[in-house]
Image 1 (cartoon, rainbow, N blue to C red):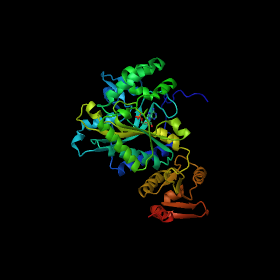
Image 2 (image 1 turned 135 degrees about the horizontal axis):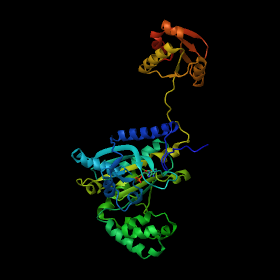
Image 3 (image 1 turned 60 degrees about the horizontal axis):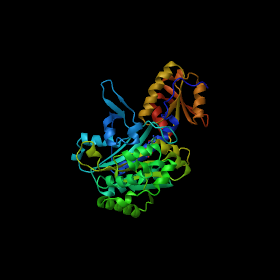
Image 4 (image 1 turned 45 degrees about the vertical axis):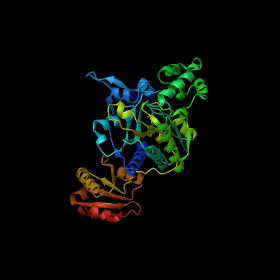
Length: 427
Ligand code: AMP
């Protein structure tokens, strides 16, 4: 086939009608769980001041360094397509004085994000994220609640083999000190590291722990672990999170290499993956943690936060094709066929009456041949066909054909909705 002149841009994709039920299923699941936990929905613009992400996500993160779609507007402002929603939500919390509301403020979202990444399995340039954010509460029970909600979403979507990777990355009290210890360890092994990590050594040695290069992986095995260097506050916070996870019987893996790509995280960080070959290929389904400094970094009053973001496409890629019912839209029980111009016009009106009566009706109004219309009704497996012919249109009548028995009855047009209601047992 000849290549069409216009195609989706690399890393972007259409969500075609056949995939919509999966996206809707994820949306509905997230919405129900958010609602149950008392979270309110928030939508923020897709476009924001680029500086929001420089300050929020962090200058030396991959996301801001390489992946942000940013550009100057005609007015000269530097703006960016959002690569994530936590910073925009923190911005909104500050902008709308949400610290004056009863705390914590619990919000959820669902919408597109943009990252200029190298497209691969589970990695797109435009993708949808959903998430839960709790602002204004530092109690570790929130960390547990966020993890619990994340698992709820995935379990509700019939994921079974899930694994939670967990770590604490400390806070502004203990992390700078740990970074120095870590830098000391890596400095003496610098020559054996990849060029990216050599640079990370200067900018943020924590990110070396995240490196996927074989030679860096070998070095990091013996690197000091932040868990052993947490300050009193971070240590007791993490202990409480782990104890509650034990209480809830949620199995987890302590992962000293989990540092997350975003700068704003403090204390608890976690990722949830599906422990199957397919799942590992997609990567983390949900990821989150605590961000106690973000609101302050963005110029607000000190307000702690904790949240999680999930990748809709990764989840859909995995649930598609697996057994389990995805709700289909209700199917029509009636087909409305017509013959002639006057009948066509009357059918448009009748169709609207059926809609108001909440009865789903199928049609092929653009077709003139009755044979074609009956064939369509048959293909859809519809038992009752209403036929409005030229004669009936003049007499304000309509024919009801039962496709199963072949019987035909004539009804008065003004009674047809009532009669059909009786036939299909609708009150
Ligand atoms: P992050 O904001 O990087 O913590 O990502 C949160 C979640 O969004 C991840 O666990 C993924 O499920 C999803 N995600 C992140 N980046 C992408 C991407 N480029 N394409 C598809 N999903 C993504």
